[in-house]
Image 1 (cartoon, helix red, strand yellow):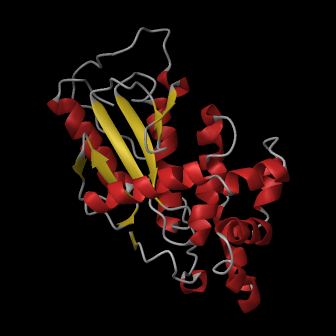
Image 2: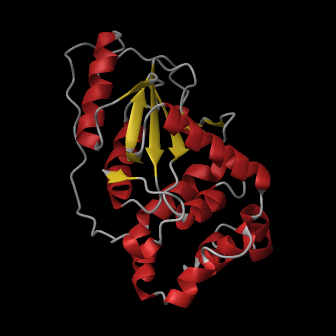
Image 3: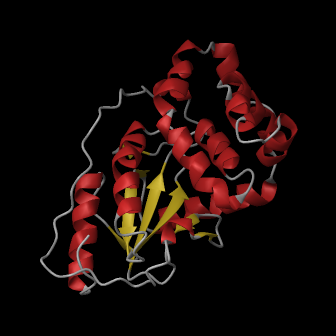
Length: 250
């Protein structure tokens, strides 16, 4: 779990952590047959929606269990959580319509802000492709921070917001990553200067603050903040909630 410092905290204070491979948790069944909330032909993995504050929701909007993830793109624990949770959720409870997952940003530094603006750049239906890719390659691109000069880092904190975001995108080769999704540098720059999206990201910070959430990754389940910061704990909370609501086992 990582505390969220102010947006002005220098990235060099962050020490990238090596990710360790972990087996995906097999969630325990409760002995009851699973009750599908969707027609057999419906796969809720393709249901993606954008909330009022710009968060992204995956799955059945009427699912009995709603998980919200508060994550930071420069948080190694978040990347580890994503590696473990995403395959399990997409293969079990999301396609059945039992659980919906909402991703909300908790920004810890200007790099978080830059990546958040870029994951929101392009087709909203492709958000989770970009979201997963930034986490999957986090260890590689975040390691570049250790080689940045002081002059480079100063550019991340000086000048207009779009200028700062463009400097970060250039230093971390984010433009190359975006081009792989058919998004040109000019289009990416427009997203980095998107004040409407910036306002939505600010709204996401206000939401986490209202809930008392100040570390990543953090979670709410059906609106209640979980005392959990890893997939092992979150998966147990999901299983318990499904059993409580007689929705069947994962």
